[in-house]
Amino acid sequence: MLYLDRNENNYGPAPACFEVLRTSDLTQLSWYDRSFTRGIQGVLSERLASDFGIPEDRVVLGYGAENILKQTVRCYLRPGETLLVPAYSWWYYRKIASEVGGRSVEYPMVQGEDRFSYDLPGLLEVAVREQPSIVFISSPNNPTGNSLDVGDLRSALARLRSSVVVLDEAYVFHTRTDYVRDLVQEYPNLIVVRTFSKYFALAGARIGFALLGSNLGILATHMHRYLGYHRLSEGLALAALDSPGYYKEIAEKMERDKLAYYAELGSIPGWRVFRSDANFVLAEIPAGCGEKLQHYLLEREIAVKFMAEPLLRSHVRITLGTTEENGRVIDAIKAFRP
Ligand code: PMP
Image (cartoon, rainbow, N blue to C red; front, side, top):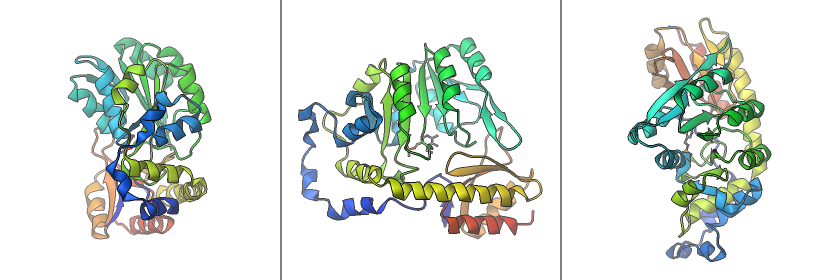
């Protein structure tokens, strides 16, 4: 089965990651990492702090971004309080709010001809009305693929001073650190969440991290691990960070393959493919043909995600695979007769 339904990276981790596992001295696993004697959490938080130019105690590590998002909600959302989420967004945001008795309220996102975009005035209007404890912004957003540019993000942050703002950057397809450093320095209520799951192709190693604004010390206390992080995962993450060329090449291939998706699937009558900054594309397909297409693709051992949300009933989200896999998907869909 070709899995293109969970936004993983089918190119696999960098060769240096394989080397980490081949050369790891497993006897080391008998012991805790002794980084705490140096007053830090571990080698990965130290490296990320240095890469992003922020203090090590404002870096948190988690079992995937998933874990960090959940801990953040548990830390800052009381029963009956409000979490704002984009109208189209990862279902998990609402789930973790409901787990603590919080309310999720949606803010609008605009569906344009060939792309989705954030609606800044719409977001701020809902924020003024709802006085949320937490605002989630996902950039690029899952499943719509659009980003919020840094200028608009600054405008939003300037007006959201009394909420914790969570910027979920799980899908950034670059390793830029400069604007993140500036933002967490300027906005004490901001948390930027990233992961090694997507760009770095390490979803199974479950490594996420976040950079915290200076007012979020309670979350840091809540999440810091005195006895260290997972030592093998740290090694994998460091090897990935040391392989920028490998990942840049993959990102470039994916950018080219997205153009093929826009052109090829976009020219099928009734199909619309939305521009994406992430490793997946969202397409609107002719109403009523979803079930048949799903069956047809599964017969050809291709799994993509058929959306089931109220606003996205005729939409399919396709994770980018390797160039060869993408060609296979495009050919299969072009040969489909509803
Ligand atoms: N954020 C978004 C928007 C996601 O779609 C996902 C995974 N589906 C995650 C975060 C979680 O990523 P992970 O836990 O693998 O780091």
